[in-house]
Length: 210
Image (cartoon, rainbow, N blue to C red; front, side, top):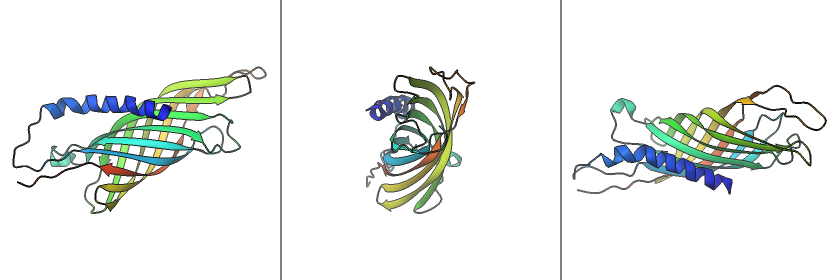
């Protein structure tokens, strides 16, 4: 499944990023320790920007939120995500349209509310779009993409938080109208998929009494 392949790549990038500072930190014996990772999954509904319509699929998130930072940086983290939109195509979309994304970047989560946690994020990554214009022609485009968005998390219980997420993507120099047997190629443009994901996050942590 391509979603899991993209998540594996994203996870590798995340752990390479966080391993170096983590190895250099030594926590005092009398301090509270935590594992500043979060992992989650959700169901996504997007407008893929191929005309009008919608495309459905799944999303996976993994985040790293260091707790040993200056107070002014409290809430800053790194998050990677993988998304596979391959289901629920509207009648206005190509019958085999599929969009996959793997990306990572910065996320800021506001820590000042008890059970609500609004956040904003900016990511860069890699996207694939597949569609067919006829029974014999299949188009495949891969691009570096940029995304921005935000949302809110709500604590359901203990370490589980419900997440409502919005994201807007930018695929530059995208060929929306490739050549077919009957029509010539048309100039490239910009693809801007956007949509919502509803899911849940599990924030790992452990605490020790001293």
